Length: 150
Image (cartoon, rainbow, N blue to C red):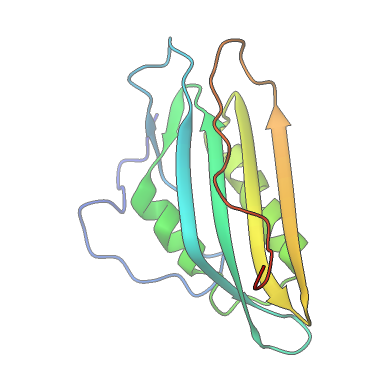
């Protein structure tokens, strides 16, 4: 059952850490149909756990819902909770994927973390779990790998 007090439609405080952020789920009205949902977070930020300097990424989250949908306002608040969170790129990307899986139990999920260069090296991180149902179309994530000034 969906939580009785969604963050949607009311003022809520910005969470100051991923652990304090709440991810809301709502019932999937098309639970008998396999389809893809995509969220893009093109301005994701966190901080380096060693230097405290900001890190920036374009995250693309694709999932095939089961009984639950991920509510988008709660995802926005969750993503923003990383703004002052110190973690490496790999940890942030995988942590987000695992947390969403824990909350909504999708049939299939993948997250692509396209991180902007730090120290001259861009890092792309990918996490996937579950089985993609047959016949579900999954488009390219649409984020080019980093090419510098090409």
